[in-house]
Length: 193
Image (spheres, rainbow, N blue to C red):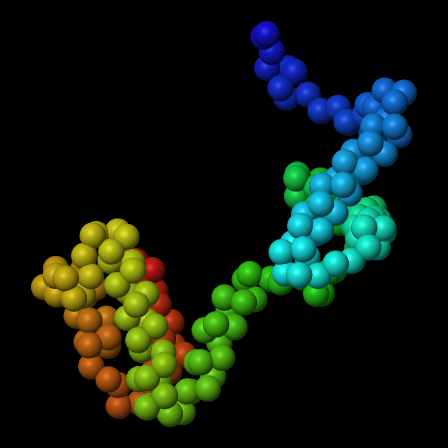
């Protein structure tokens, strides 16, 4: 059996379920439901008998059929699965609406830094405890990814790669939190790594 690349890349709607089933589709469904009901009822009867309980077979069959009916109804009422292609907007004009409930990854990343910076803007201890370790982790990660070292594994090489001002900033606690301009310069040095 050979398949061409055009066959693999072409897209065709799957035929409806009724179209796929031959004329005996309803009979097949009923037989399958009866077989599943009989199997589940047998397991339940055996389980109840092992613990010493006896329940009428018709009650068990009715219960199993009720559970299967509820399962089928909920399956029919469930929303369709999300499309595999993703929710890409077509090229051209935007729809003019904004999904305010969507999670914006950029906003989450900004908030991750904005809140601690704002919270410790005037407090040296908070800056030293909260922000400085994060900046150190960021510097170590950049050093590890780009140069294969960290400040702990090879301090001498890390010091030369970071530069003296950035090394001093990360190694010694500041007497005061840096100004936004100083912090921007520190981030620019980290980005140069």
